[in-house]
Amino acid sequence: MNEIRMLSTSGILGYGYAEDSLRRGMAREPHIIGADGGSTDPGPHYLGAGTSFCNRMAVKRDLKLMLQAAVAARIPCIIGTAGGAGGEPHLQDTAALVREIAREEGLSFPMALIHAEPDRATLHRMREGGRTKPLASLPELDAATIDRAERIVAMMGPEPIARALDEGAQVILCGRSSDPAQWVAPALRAGIPPAPAWYAGKMLECGAEPAVPKEPDCLLVTLRDDHLVCEPPNPIRRCTPLSVANFALHENASPIHHLEPGGMLDTEHVRFDPVSDRAVRVSGMTWTPADTYTVKLEGVERAGYRAITLCGTRDPVLIGQMDDYLVGHRERVVMKTTAIGIPGAAWQMKVRVYGQDGVMGAWERAPRNTPHELGFVVEVLADSQEIADGVLAVARTSLLHADFPGRLCREGNMAFPFSPSDIPLGPLYRFSVFHLCVPDDPYALFPIEHERV
Image (cartoon, rainbow, N blue to C red; front, side):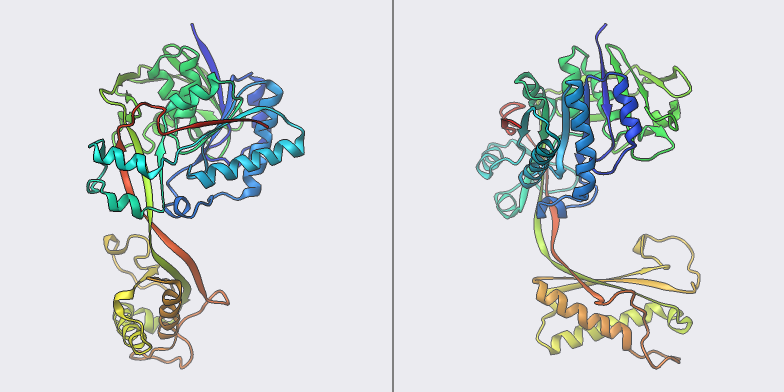
């Protein structure tokens, strides 16, 4: 029976893990070590801006320990969705960090970069050939959307990663990749069938999340032809049938059908059997190959510029009439910004009221109670940063100094925790491409670049 052991250090590179967990995991002699490097969870900004949502020092710490362990054990180290979003700047930043660590620690290894930012001409050809399809409620992909996008990445499956391994890479940095793909690739190369390989990838993509208590940490999966065993190296954690089954529902529209590049993982008849008080055996999954191989495209476009301010009030008289006060506040902002030459069409404003409905907004169903304090996030979106900053300044002063019935305090209505109070946030991005495409083959959108570090 084929067997491969794979060690995932955490759900996101830079989220941290216990160094002792890594040592214990490496003592089990895994064949692969790795971590996912990114996600769309933090929103579209990082893909558009070309930056990471994780701190560089934290990423360097995690990556250094992994590289040292991989080199010492002579096993591959694979990073999925490098740099947070998997675009070209993210991939290059991660590669520069790997070279820096290798130079400082005296490490040497063959490295592969798998690019995942297709050129626009290729995207246009696929669109013109009828080889794109919208996901969710988006419209069909058109030429203008492709041209407007700040950045578009394609989500690779396991095939390019397996090819990089075949070509001799020990350290592999992936552009945007399906979260399980970095684990599926070595599993398939080891002769494991697709169903358990993909299920193992699902377990490993977030490190110790299938274990309890939950916290960023390592997970070891032992994978065989017809089952896998999940176990956290850290002795303070354990996998239970419930914790593993619960994590299997992670980030999927269907609880049993998981769509991936090349097919569908079906978990309807999966069994979760404890093999100890800390490890769980998973079996019974099936894999159905797709008739057509598809790849997901993710893209963002610039939607304007944003500025915010934070403040709060404890005035019971004002809190009791907050809805009316905010209606008047908006009217004052429109009047004052028009007077200084800023047209209303050039900006939008949103005031989130925390302690009332700041999280849910119009969907809030809890009964209204009178709180002792309210917090506000005032957000302005505009055509330029100058306009966003200007409108926010008006909004802040109008919120602070406007009168209201029964007002007793003749000074400011709000308390601001910071000086300066106004925070320019720069460009605002929104997702604009969320489509499937049919590439020429699973490798076509993902060129591999090799180097010796």
